[in-house]
Amino acid sequence: MGRSKTRGVCAAICLGALQGLSGCALPGSGPSTADVVQQASVEQTLRYEVVDIDSTTIETLTRRGSESFSTRFGDRKVTAEPVIGVGDAVTVTIWEAGPGGLFSAPLVSDKVSAGSNSATIPEQVVGRDGGITVPYAGRVRVVGKTTRAVQQTIEQALEGKALQPQVLVNVTKATSDSVSVGGEVAMGARVPLSVRGDRILEVIAAAGGVKAPVNETFVELSRGSTTSRIPLTRIIAYPRENIYMHPDDVLTLVLDPQTFLAYGATGANAEIPFDADGITLAEAITKAGGLNDSRSDPRGVFIFRYEIEPIARALRPDSPLVNRGRLTPIVYRLNLTDPNSLFLEQQFRIANRDLIYVSNSPSSDVQKVFNVFAPGLSTAGSVASIGVGAASVK
Image 1 (cartoon, rainbow, N blue to C red):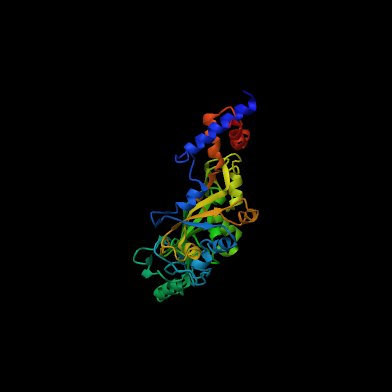
Image 2 (cartoon, rainbow, N blue to C red):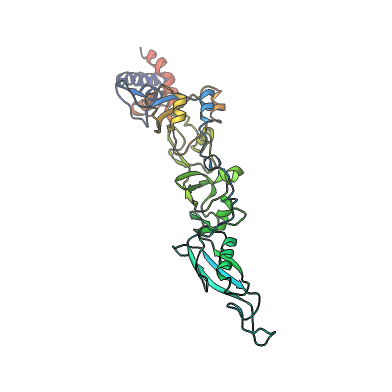
């Protein structure tokens, strides 16, 4: 029997095998293109929404955006003069008009003083009662007051006791007018705010800078009962996000590498880092090694994502899966046989933890059968011979 007849016989055998296996499930690495679409609803129960990636979808997804510090907190600078708080450390220096007073050196003669006409009270921490102790003035309440107001209070308390006293109050450690910085910084600490005002990046620099990769670091800001989180790269790229810090703000730098999962008929099946401040679907497919030429179905490129409620409602307003405050399972579909899809994939932004799945081509099932029944035949020749070869056997 000649080579061509042998090929034809094998092709006929494989054709019969395919027909015999038509009701069986061949081993595969995941659902086919048809399976993903058809199994969105099982037994009249909708499990996920399938959304085709087109210009309308891209426009809707541009509204997905991200959290904004400037929108959430505003960028109001603290213009009021700082006030003293509990836990602050202060020093008090008192001058008198002449020698021989309570805080000045005694007179040696009628015109000569033995020393300075001032005295500095050692550093004190403002107690829980909100006060400090000043000799001959007693307990002086300072919490909630500016240094100038405290100076006047002490001067009034010393009148009639000291010689025309002049007082200078200095805050040496302003723990109450500071922010807490922690997480992925070189030195986590409470950072005092300057009188001129400090922005986020200035406070991070004061804490020693970032020790994690910038593109994998997120900044979490808590102010009162409100907490928000955005990428550090966003603060660097958009100055409006570099807002002023307020006393008692808590700034935490979090290491959160942005990754996506590549699965199915791609060059690599793995969890792949962005290594950038956001990537597109085109870039993600390239990072995954592209589509596998011998296995992939270019009509079956899918992105599995739990979508936020506003976007899901805009895409599928009548879907029973869209509920207030909950994430909606959505499968985005792209058909790469359409040349326009090459433009769309450059506009589709990948989100953190997205799963990109490329289904197997139907012809890959034919290849599996040939590998079992006729491993010696080349795929291209065998597939082409299914019809011709089967006819020649007759």
